[in-house]
Amino acid sequence: MASAAEGDVGAAAELATVLRGGFQNLSLNKLATSLGASEQALRLIISIFLGYPLALFYRHYLFYKDSYLIHLFHAFTGLSIAYYNFGIQLYHSLLCVLLQFLILRLMGRTITAVLTTFCFQMAYLLAGYYYTATGNYDIKWTMPHCVLTLKLIGLVIDYYDGGKDQKSLSSEQQKYAIRGVPSLLEVAGFSYFYGAFLVGPQFSMNHYMKLVQGQLTDLPGKIPNSTVPALKRLSLGLVYLVGYTLLSQHITEDYLLTDDYENRSFWFRCLYMLVWGKVVLYKYVACWLVTEGVCILTGLGFHGLDELGRAKWDTCANMKVWLFETDPRFTGTIASFNINTNAWVARYFFKRLRFLGNKQLSQGLSLLFLSLWHGLHSGYLVCFQMEFLIVIVERQAASLIQDSPALSSLASVRVLQPLYYLVQQTIHWLFMGYSMTAFCLFTWDKWLKVAQSRTGAEKTRLPFHSTPSSQSTENQKPGCGKTGLPQLCLRCRPCLHLGPKGRLSWEE
Image (tube, rainbow, N blue to C red; front, top):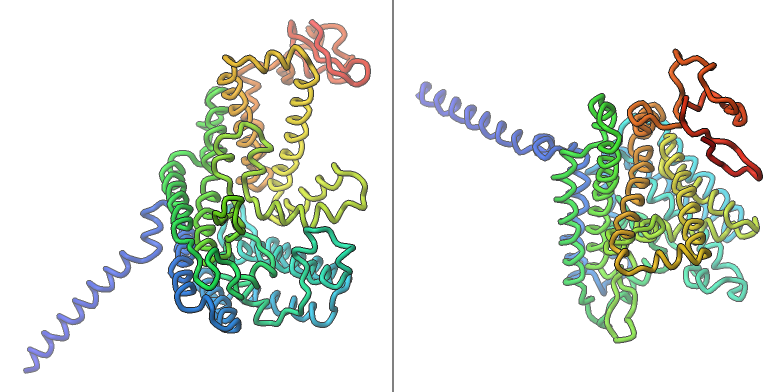
């Protein structure tokens, strides 16, 4: 009997060992490793896709139910997703939401409430960046918190506008102004809505309340007929997700820091930078398309009917995919990428700086705000500074062509249009890759190393590269001192001079 019992115990222990090993093989960490991703990235993707079953449950069981039940559902599911991804660190968002509600109630519709909210929420976010920052891209509680920060700042501004005379507001401000007083449950549901908590998109409290009240449907009295539009965005998001997963294993930013990349030819490095700058954006495109599908499925993406009576579902669209893939201009990429965040900055920051009386200054400050909102790394500041400069140059180049009859006629030659398009796209994505280098490598020592290697001066012998130390200054051409930078010229190369009115000119 004893031996039989011992045998049963041994078999049970062996079975437990086998099962434990099986569960370990199925663990998120091992699965993430097999996919070439981190466990946190896999948790993020799972959480985004969880929005679809949650949206289906909401559609069929809660769409026309009492508002408090819907708020509770959104708050509970959002908090659960936060705990699944970040554990106890969800207290950061809870604290900011609670304090924001107290600011609304205690300070009311005052400019003091707006300034207090802006300073506190941004300071909390920046402090989070400071204490959690590393030299790599890490998925941590600050990622959804930056989305929440914009939501709460926009909430208090809309609440402030709601206390003004409607005649003093623009039509846009009237649309978003909050006339009532939000409850804590409403603020929580708005903040933790599962379809947008992790990676966006941004939407207003008024739009969220329309969802809760059952107004966001193309079929009044029924659940929205949005399943097909949602599945289309999901399918497109999956295409980008699979594409990024496959390509990112071979085209990585880590390679930019290797000696092999630095020793490659100048043109190879430019081509690699061009392709990488495109591929690296696909992870953002994939996430936004998938979450847009969730928002459409719930009805939050409803944007009324067009002139033919067809429903529009683009309220929560963060991507214009066709424009993103086909437009050869930098401004086209900006207009097609992270749409709702850009619209938020325009509505709550850029347009509120009208009192400065300087559009370019307002644009510069808006981009500075965006760079700080992304993080404290120098790469963010460089990226948005590059964006600002490239857009200015692009507009000036377009004006130059339009103002020149010769260039205008040349640009209008039909047979050359494909060539022009190819050249534009090449320049466009090369400079996009150049900007994304700083954005993705974060720290100055990394992106500066890549920027220096990309000049290729030693290999291509650019005329304005520093001379070797062994070269005697006696061999330099006379007149190079006009620039005040004689070390920038090589013997028998054209010299770059600063001419009249600050214009650059070449001299043989």
